[in-house]
Length: 376
Image (cartoon, rainbow, N blue to C red; front, side, top):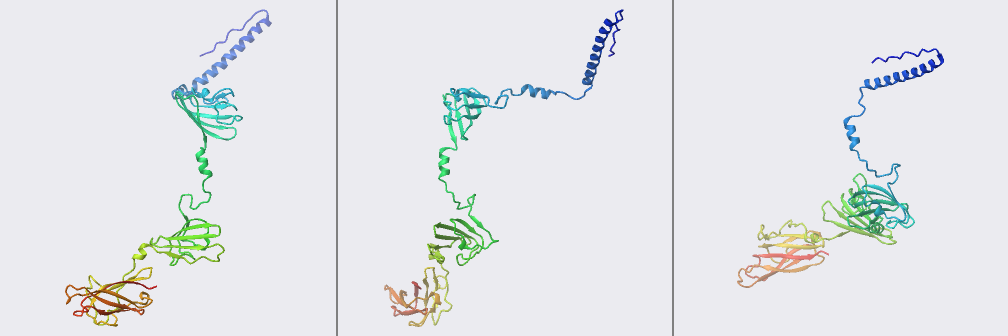
């Protein structure tokens, strides 16, 4: 577009002509400037506002949760109620002056809060008073006031205040761990607690185990250690360090029912003389000793000579402290209807001797063992 310039004024009075000509000149300069800006805008290929941006702006939430200054949206004066001020609002921030009727804070303390949910007279939120106390609140349709709960709750505070301050385990509940890379001195574990000793250590139970759960209980200068080995899961030991004692008591093993019942069966190295096992499959001669020191002998023999000649000899650790006599069942062959018996001697040297039998017809046809005695 071509800008046409007007013809200058030509009059006899040059002063008046210059006045009008200067005004026209200014108008022309402004027109040139406007045309230049318009052309720049027209030729600018950048999009100034997309349709998506316009839609976002048009659909944006216009509701405020704070004042334009960023402070609380709602102010509750001392003669007002928080419930009345926020019950019809959505999410919002509020401030209540000291002395507000339904404030959970002391009468001389103000409070600030955030209502996080608010719909149709249903709301909940959090608030903190100027003394630093925190509160949770809620109300529902039909309620005439706010229900406040101080945080933490009274129940939580009592539970925490009454909680035990000394740890007896790690934070995850597992026992304090002493790994295989170290050598644990059991004498040094004097703090009440639960421990897992994953090495053989020193001053521990004997025989040494490389996996032991240890319980330590300390009361003043009296200590108790209880060790549970987890290699076989059958052995428990304990010891005590008493008040003013210079050293621990020896480790004592706790005897369990399985200790009493169990014991490896052994067979005699030699059945002597003319004696033989009556039934090696079903009634073999054997013996065992449990942790109480009790020896049990079972089985049946036949064919030997009665008297003090040993049938077999027990090893030293299986022998009684003094000679013991037992009565057992003998064969009744040849004496129909009459039960028969025999007398057996076990002396302190371990000799097991069948001394006599009541069956005169067949005295050694069937001799049974079923005895138990103590070696202590």
